[in-house]
Image 1 (cartoon, rainbow, N blue to C red):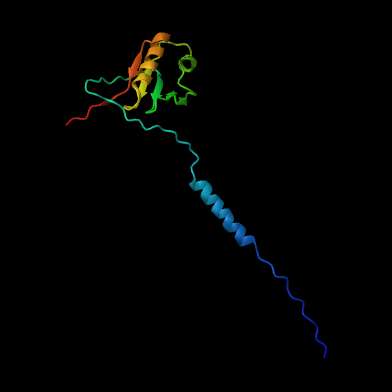
Image 2: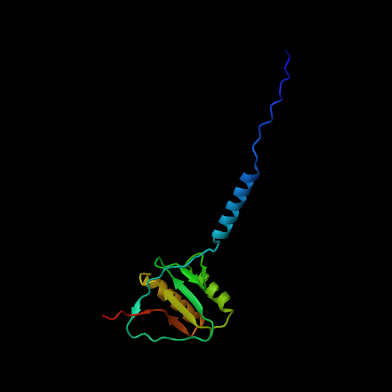
Length: 140
């Protein structure tokens, strides 16, 4: 007897469901992931008992001094704490308008010298409206 050998069917894996699952995972992660870069500094502001609240109608330059004494002017970090760097940044960001209000926001544990330095430089440049940010003293 001679039997014909049956050809074995080629074994293959159907990749269509796998591609569907990977595609759905990709869509899920793209939708659920946020790409917002948040660079907020947490500052512990000093307190003041006799502080007055000022509402500014014009846009002010804001200088933030962190607890290590590093400066950020209008959200832009300075490369160093050199006086010339600070002067240059203030001049460029104020666009030579010395009537622009300057708000100094310093951490309560920031070095006192860093706060005095920015006020001294701004005053020497001719800024006349310099404000210091504080928080109200806790009652109790």
